Length: 81
Image 1 (cartoon, helix red, strand yellow):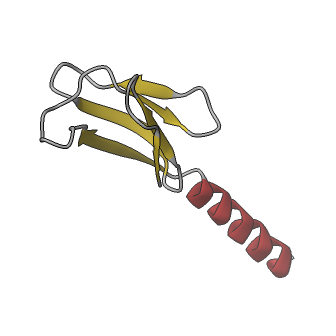
Image 2: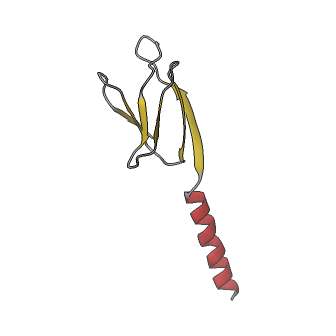
Image 3: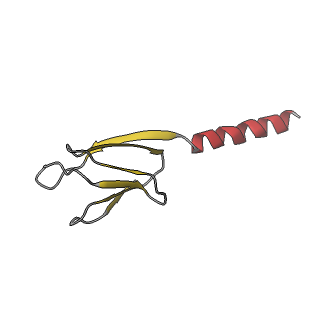
């Protein structure tokens, strides 16, 4: 019984850590340092995303191992883990 309880506890701990969410915030800028409003930021493989505001700032809640995909017309799409 003790072994089963210990195994169950370890499995639940791994499940909760895999679901750990973080808030990623940042500012998107061009090469000259100017901010870029309207950049789409998506959690790769999902439809969950956000868009930068007028100052180029964004905030998104994602799992800690997420890859973010940044796209904007006229610019190369970038993926950042």
